Length: 458
Image (tube, one colour):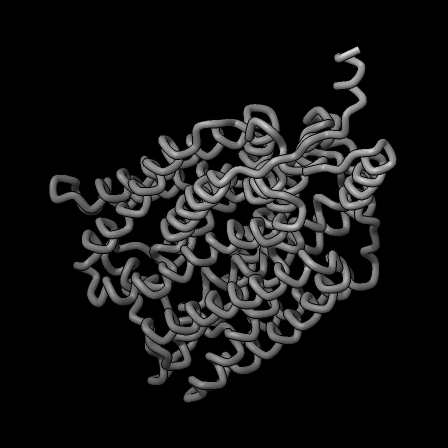
């Protein structure tokens, strides 16, 4: 009788205060990894002079994250959905810290400058690249496992925006710490501190794979489909495939923008410090937009409508950047366009991840987010390879670039191509993407069934 009563009882859901510690540890790790990723992009010219390398080699310091993320992204989704969030985050934190240590060794006094410094630096970046997908795929999983449904989009927004926050810190700190090429050891020494903190937080702060009691019906079934079965389901899901291609393309555009911003604007006479300010505004307004949109979506559940509208505004802002970045002496206008680009573009990032879960449920959250990121990494790598190839050598007195190896480049054609790609992705997404909210429907049905049985969830 007691067993029958227990089986008939409605499910009980519970939240735990330590979910905020798990969220904070994830944010610290994601922020540190993003700082390591774009350490050198805001000071690309100084990096080229210190290591005596070309600008193409400097770009590879950023692009290695994309190249490694493509094949390892599949492994990361398997680790997250099979071994769990805790294992994934701890492994990511150790790899991230190892990368920072190797980077610091690359500028040690006992390492020969020409023969070992740059290979060691690239090795450190590669360790960080392996760490990236393990933490970047985590926000939807974290939100689903630890947070109730009315807090999911907000939790996803907070953990997702930690990565852009790291990019913000890189854009501010790198130009401040590296006024001259000789300051490279100081720069890398500062960047290792967040990696140590993140490693300690994840290793000792996250004690459980999942909470003892799930916070929602969706959490109770967050990995109901086996990994390979889920992959097949995603590739047969028309709505998800459109989201994966279009939203992945948006991620690729944002990745290339972050990596190449300094090189694009310095040729028009803008300093590294101003490029860092533009990158910072890009992130700050992006975080603000994501915060506002996350709160709105948590209340309304209008995932699809808000994503489409903001994607279109993002394309318009990208076109504005392509036009304004051609002008000299327009610092205010350039800063304004970068702010709008971030505000509209970054705001759809966490909502788009939630939308991927909604259209693919009951596939595991890490699997659905992972394929979108692999698409973004692949498209980002192709864009970063394409844009410098389209840039033309330029001569003139207006450039503020301080490049030790190679010619100064005019980025007019590459920025117009970037704007065209962003516009194409936005139009395709707005016209062709349609889906039902499968997870929301399943949870609403579960709550309704519980009420009909005479009980309610807690």
